[in-house]
Every structure is written in C-alpha cells, then in structure tokens.
Amino acid sequence: MKTITSPSNPTIKFIRSLRQRKERKSTGFFYVEGIRLIGEAVRTQQRFLHVIICPELLDSPFGKELVTTIEGQGVDTISVPEAIFNSISLKEGPQGIAAVLEENWGVLEELIIKKGLWVALDAVQDPGNLGSILRSLDAAGGQGIILLDESTDPYHPTSVRASMGGIFSQKIIQCSFATFSNWKTRSTYPLIGTLCGEGLNYRRYNYPEDMILLMGSEQKGLSSKHKEICDGVVTIPMKGTVDSLNLSNATSIVLFEIFAQLQDSIK
Amino acid sequence: MKTITSPSNPTIKFIRSLRQRKERKSTGFFYVEGIRLIGEAVRTQQRFLHVIICPELLDSPFGKELVTTIEGQGVDTISVPEAIFNSISLKEGPQGIAAVLEENWGVLEELIIKKGLWVALDAVQDPGNLGSILRSLDAAGGQGIILLDESTDPYHPTSVRASMGGIFSQKIIQCSFATFSNWKTRSTYPLIGTLCGEGLNYRRYNYPEDMILLMGSEQKGLSSKHKEICDGVVTIPMKGTVDSLNLSNATSIVLFEIFAQLQDSIK
Image (tube, rainbow over all chains, first blue to last red; front, side, top):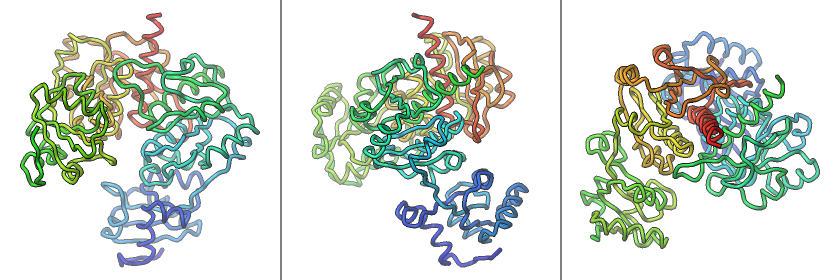
C-alpha cells in the first residue's frame, strides 16, 4: 500500500476528473465509493484500477477485509489522509473507501446467449432514474439494460450509487436505435413497449420469459418508430391529474408485473 | 402588471430566498415554475402570492392565457427581463413563467372525511423520491400523504417539480410518529406497512378501499414501532443481488397493486 499526502498528486487529480463524463469516456474508468458498492464490485469480480482508503474514516471490519482482498489481487492500493479523501468523496459522511474500476460494456450479441429479462431505454436523461432502474431490474431477476441513442452515462456517480450494485450485476449495452432495430429484426427477440394511454393493460399481458421491456424517454415516451418494432404494447392505466409516471417508477411497476407472472408460472 | 428591472429588488430577493427550507418554513410560501405546473396550480385553485413572467421567454399561448387568468384573480403579476428571470429560475430552458404560492398543509382529521388511499412515509430524505411518490399517488387515485417525523420538505423545488402537480392534488400532512400512532388507535383507519423480506406477498393481500400504505425511510425501512401499529404487513419478493428497492419505486409497485385490485373489484 502506498501513501499519498499531496492533493495535487496526478492520481488524486485523475480520480477527481472521473466526475466528468468526457474523462470517463476517454479513459474507460469510473469512480465508486462506499463499503457496500465496493463489496458488490469484489463479489462480482469487477476490474479494479485503484483502491483508495482513508484509515481515519474506515473503521468497519468488513471494509478492512475488503481492502485486504483487493490488495491481495495485486490492485494498486492508496492510503490518503482525511482531507484528501474528502476532496475526492461524493458522499456525505464518507466511509473511507473508494475505487476506480474499469467500465464494462456489453454487446447486443450477448443477449442471445444470456437470454432472460432485459430493459431497453430510449434516450434516458436522468442518471438517478437510470441507476434506480438498474436496481429494480436486478431485483426482478433481470440480465441487463440496453441504452438507445443519446442516453445519460450509466457510470455517472449518481447512477452508480442509485443502482446499489445493479451496475455490476446487469450487462450494460449502448447502441443507436438503428442498430438495435436491425438486430431486433434478425434476432426476433421479443420486445414489449410501454406506452402512455395506449396498448393492453400491462396486467393482462402474458409476458414471455425471454424478453426486452422497452421504455421511452422521460420527456417524450415511445415514438411511432419504437412502437413499430415492438411485438406487443402495454399501458399502465391511471387516474388523477398527472398523465404519466416517473420513468423509473413506471419501469419498476411493469418489471414487477413481469417478475410476478414468471414466479407464479414456476409455482 | 408591474415591471421589475433591478436584480436586487426585495421581491426578487424574496423569491430566490425560497430555495432555502428555513425561508419557506418561516414564510409559508414556495416557488413553482413552468407552464404545466402553474396550469395545475390554477386548475386546483392554489393561492398565488406572485406570478412572475418574462415576456421574451413566454411564447406559449396557453402560458399567456394562464397569466391573464391569474392576473384576473387580482394576483400580483410581475414582468421581468430575461437576466432576472434566469436568476430566479431553477430550470434548464426556462419557459418564462413562475409563481410564489402559499403552502397548504392538512391535518390528520381530514383523512376521515376524505377517506380513500393515502401514503404515510417515515422520515423520507430525498425530495426527488417524495415528489415522484406524490406523482404516483395521484396517478393511483390517492388522496394524500402523511410525512412522519423528520422528513424532507414536500415544497422543496425538486419535490414540487418531480410531483408533476401531485403536490397540488394530494393533501400534505406532517406529524410526529407519536401523534400519528395516537390518531391511528382512535380512528382505526386501516394501515398496511411494507417491509423488506417479511410479510405477505404484496400481490396476495386484499387491500381495503380506504387505507394508508406505510413505507419506511430510504436508509432504515420500517422499524418495529411502526410495524406494531400496522393492521397488515406486506413485502415485495425479489431476487438478484440488491436487497431492497428505491423507496419511490417500491411505493409505486405496491400502490399500483392496490389501484389494480380496486379497479378489478369495480368491474
């Protein structure tokens, strides 16, 4: 383990720079923080570039064990004083453990191999929404997510944190709608879209075990080009004055209907 | 309509100060922005203190109609240049219409009169979660929300925006757990709690038409003191590696189960 005490050390500067999307994109690395997320990263065998610890802050025995495990794998381990840790931390009440990991992007072809339940999101904008969809998808036994067109970055710190580890358990695929549409025509993998106010009641649809749930963006919902490539379209009936739900809430409601149907069919 | 051109005008300063919770609390006013939300505020007859418009930005005919309506009700209407509007605006791409409204807090006794579906949240921390729960609750035909103990402010700009108008359609009640527990014992209004990994599968519970759905905080879930006063406890079965869902996703999943059961029983 090495110790860094200068806040202008290049590694410390690099870690802070990963807050910016362009730095993540050009390097292929992202930042995670906290015992729980780093525990999940170890469990799911993510690729670590650095582990950063702050001995004054890291008092959890499980956290210390994690550091030993990661260090034992030959990962560069850096100890920093509290002031430096606070300068890289994005949490209130930091736990004294953070890491830089390699982004892990999948390709559409993996979908055919893994099969199961996937979510495709058109141009999702809010990293908190994306992260909490990854969390719900993981909890509903999903395999991964497909980000269509200009989407927010799944490796944005807010998305990573909101995913509660879903960022590691779920495959992350990004492609244009044209690529996806082409692949969908060839693969015939079932695609069910969710629309506002149009389609079958989402509770009356019989979902296949292997499928992609397609959701529109926060602002626009699903357009007709998206609808055209769907094998089925469902809607969430609602009343009241709002005419739509938050994207991550709508996705979770349909995902847990799919999950429950599958559980019932197993019993 | 009066025109203000100085950024240091006391009214402009007051409007900006409403970003802070303590200012909202001491004055009882809050800030809303955008055509849609202000349209909902008019429709649901909220009490306006000021309407602020920026003629260079407000080009929507519906937006202009709204201003005429509000002005016709004798509300103080202020026109400001773009630079000042941008200094009070919290939106990217502001639409040139904002307002200061009176907060509207309800009391537990109203619940017995209104009846129907309510949500109680223990110490909710994230204003985005609170707002999107208000949005889902509105969409599920709910009546209002009860905020227990130290909760985030429902009139926080993030909560107001995320509610998409649910902040106006839903009654907002805030009280201590002790007060709520006392009231619950007297009123016998049905209370169903949601727990992680404990309780009946939320899809197998027969929800009454009049009920409160009780959800724990983001960090802690429901404690035993909360559980004790519940008439029933349900859980959302899940698999995967995460052990819980985002609070607003979990609330939405159970709310839409309750809503669907009620719709099915009407048919």
